[in-house]
Image (cartoon, rainbow, N blue to C red; front, side):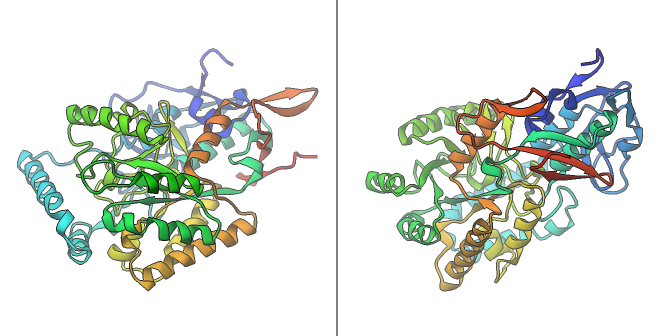
Length: 456
């Protein structure tokens, strides 16, 4: 590695390619302030940059940092820190609080308290009316990109192309994203919100089993309802997974730092008690900087794009990634509640569109379907259509459909693998299951294509 080059670990973790492909040099003096710019048309970045004028918001024209990239002597020189930009997106650090008025902040907190006080007694018909009012301007949000944001994945692809050009090579070996060469991955999760949802859990397991799809059920451990030990055992005996959803689903988990760490200790006790590896916060509230206080192996609280969530933003990727020692399995599709009651959809066309966009990047297709909202023949019929579509894609060889804990295990195992050259051939070290595959990223007309066959 050249003296001034910095090895970009998130890039290498993403591709698991030879280390020298991840060498990038930062040019110039980074700007003192962070802001928005782009790295090629439409690829929004947030961070510091040594060139151009940074914007305070992602709307409107942005400085294109790709024009300031230098490729020389086998090295890529960037006017920004690639790792910093990617972490800013994955951890939603680009979300700047624009409410400078203390009065406005107090009013929003009061509205939150009133809503969540009455929510347990509020029918869906009333809730969806209020939520449509609050979310009425969601289509005007330009970034992250609706209906799926793949910005981080596109940034890494652009960086790999530049690295290949710098080294004057047209093909790069890397460890494929999913086991057995699966093009993409899908996982089904069910958040149980109230006692009515508990009552339908067995019926939902029957539905999933009828399409040979196993799923995880996220249980609220305190206050909202009780779950019998018999049901918990039935989940596991039938091959399903039990995870934790928040503590009491009151919407306050990430509201106050001191309260969060107090609740985190109780959450960790329930994780041990339930034998659960996964966690999801209620209402998709989240804070990446506090998350490691949760003793879960993986988290599922970060949407790729969160236009229809109370907390806007998004992690801008369709791939798992690490937040410290926790694997984040992002939510990459629209929740069933939003599809049915906010968008008032009568088909699964939006889900199909999202599936297509995610598979184009060989990503993780993750769903939340609540047993609480599958009440009518229409709702159950839509869910059946989704299960049927996923099953068809699996039969065509397009999808691997594991439990979330299996995705977590694979991503951790893959992260420990290494690609080594031996006798002029590449092989994978650290793959006890022998399910990993060597793929090749090939540069064709300035675009990447993936293949399992080497050149020549």
